[in-house]
Image 1 (cartoon, rainbow, N blue to C red):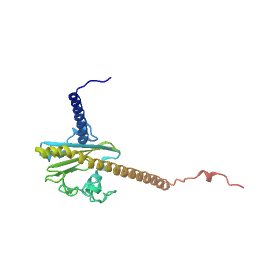
Image 2 (tube, one colour):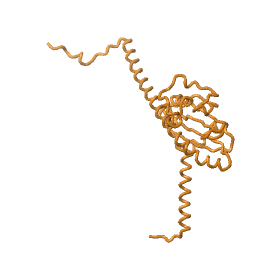
Image 3 (cartoon, rainbow, N blue to C red):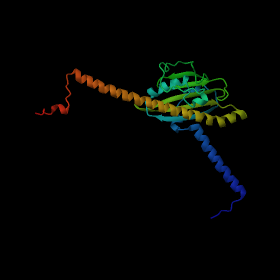
Image 4 (cartoon, rainbow, N blue to C red):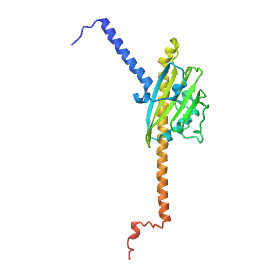
Length: 238
């Protein structure tokens, strides 16, 4: 059944539909992978950026404990772990942990020397800040990488990127476009950390299992235990 709607009504419906789609897309760009509970958590980066604030949240579940993931986050001062051909001059981000890279300290320059490490809590969070303007990041940007344990074998990585909501047309355009570019790079980064952390944890667990089996065998030998195969118990022929 056809409806006889006027051109003005159709234009209004199209406008409402486009507005709803735009709102949904913007929400996704600013809140990829997160829940209301994630976004309500306290993030130290909010304390280092002047208001008013604009937030972008990202989150991902990782099947590895927080203490395994944290050293990988520390390597952000070595490489970005995103699209290396874009933000690392085509140099490959290290696929393994670098000895001593987790010995971080406040004041270090991170992520292509753009951000400064302003605070951290081992196994829990890293907070970065940039105070001066950059061509992409703009002035006054902070980010907190927060690890929330689920259990002994898994955790959730939540990232809050907070920026100064600069007034004016330039500020409005930046607030509109920035989350999309940042989402593309951050999504790749978090997926990379997930893959590397889970691989490292599986490898460590397998190593512990093999070491445990070797230790059990050694203990048995020390106790004088003789392991006899069934074939040796068969009577000799003839």
